[in-house]
Image (cartoon, rainbow, N blue to C red):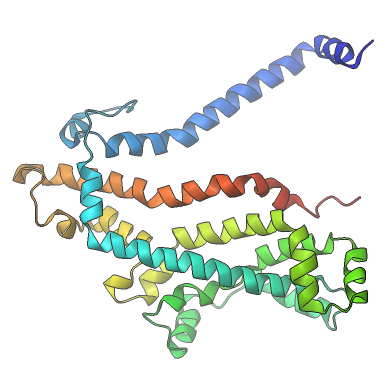
Length: 305
């Protein structure tokens, strides 16, 4: 019997319970997918809908109610959103680069089994995952370092994530020791081994950790709320918070009347939905390029042959 025929025979002999279980899994995943995707589709449909029709609509929104791009025009006219994008791009690019450099260096140190006081250093690193000084001591440190109202206050306090360092350490330890020994015989030092030998091998892990750091910086707003005082230095998420919670839309709606005076609330609602869509587009565009490394990167080193 051929391999294909054997496979079909085994599939045909599956029990009724197994088929029911698979059917349940498929239905469950479809429902879960709808639950996950629908909020995004709702905001997308609402952002291009006629705000007056949207206000009068009740129930599930399956398609745009009318069509308008005025919400996106309001977003592009808002100077705060433009500055927010620039600040967020700076924090994401510079912050992620700093995160990866120091995380790789730290994880390389922890991956060396012959390191003096290896267990103590590892214990101290893991300790920070469960205990920290809290908001007030952290604020005092940031203030004493002169980082208040500086964009570096959004990068330096969270420079290293112990969780990500442990993942990187595990990946580095999974690299065959023969590669390092060969590099040492050629006269390579620790930095050369890390850059030229180890990093190219663990690219999937680095891509996954980079995505973690990028998403973290992109979505962060609480540190900016505490440390940043100048409105022009607000990151995008803090500007978005102001629009969604405080309804600060005067700057976006000044200079041109998109709606009649009685339609101000409808315009604010449309602006909220449009701002949400604009704020997530960049990170959504980046994710597909890194997603293929995600599972491999996180799981590398978990199974050893």
